[in-house]
Image 1 (cartoon, rainbow, N blue to C red):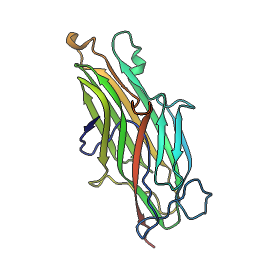
Image 2 (cartoon, one colour; image 1 turned 45 degrees about the horizontal axis):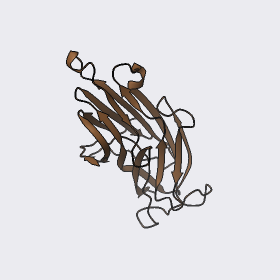
Image 3 (cartoon, rainbow, N blue to C red; image 1 turned 30 degrees about the vertical axis):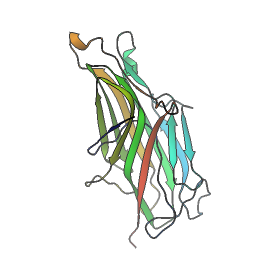
Image 4 (cartoon, helix red, strand yellow; image 1 turned 90 degrees about the horizontal axis):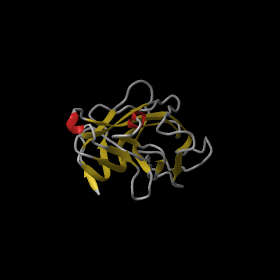
Length: 219
């Protein structure tokens, strides 16, 4: 499996949060518990876009809330001779309603994306993910240049002033807007180049993984 280094980037596909046991620097784990239980849990996830049509996304949360994962069935892009041009770019906007005890706030500390890409010489692939609570947040951007044919795992740490923290006054939904596209470089030399970005061959689904960082709100 190939591992691609990133500089303030993160890419392709699956979603999970690291929430460890209760300590002085983070609230306790929760799982699927009721609001007001004083623990961390996912209340609701909503999504829309041609990369994630209704019924194509599965969400899993571990009983201890140490991992939360989104699995995509339809987030696939392709380009090449005879392929409908509308398949070259897809988008998915996800909102994660994370609930947690009063007095805490969180941000995204790092992100992992796992998938598969097959890109011929003369073609390129790209994923852009924008993370925010209210207003703008960090943009994680990664590019693949052909020839490339392998699974990939891309990791990125969010830092350098890019961090955006959830409100201390009321829970803010975390919004993740992801665009995936493939294209040829142009010219007769590359007009027949093909490219595809799709699911991870390990279990046949795309995955995003996000780990959270917590801090206590000021009085």
